[in-house]
Image (cartoon, rainbow, N blue to C red):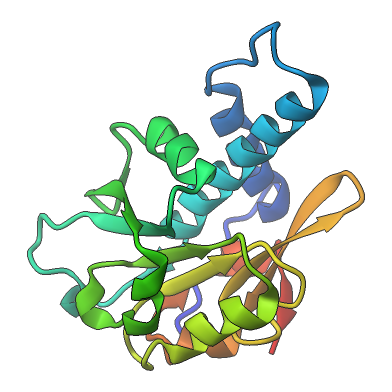
Length: 199
């Protein structure tokens, strides 16, 4: 796996978390009419969307995974996931390695047919248990260049690439380096330095 070295100075963990914070602060605020629970859920979606964008920045796909030099980095979501709308709003005009970042909603039934021809570079899986999500992730052929991301307990340990894990009031991430390598994706040490590595 190709590892990019982190720069000296501020710790990479603080730097990446700062980038996520700045991204969330740039998002529209919570209206007065929203309940406290709704506000918390909105903030969590904003944080996850910011993290996903940074996952893209610190990952490197093969050129073969893009149809043309102008092809976008495509983040796919199963069904009408509220994080898709949040991310679509927050990434307007943003790029990763000179490629526009876009989102796409796919039918859940398509999960069994995810491969290199799907056009997805990242697949966010939620709204199901870890076993079902892992079945979808593990069914993706090796070398498809699809970064699977989930938010259910045990997802990364069962074969997902990246998993959001709540730790008290914080949101931590787990990374399965074996899965990422198997998909042919190279990740930066900047990402690995803030993650819990699982295999």
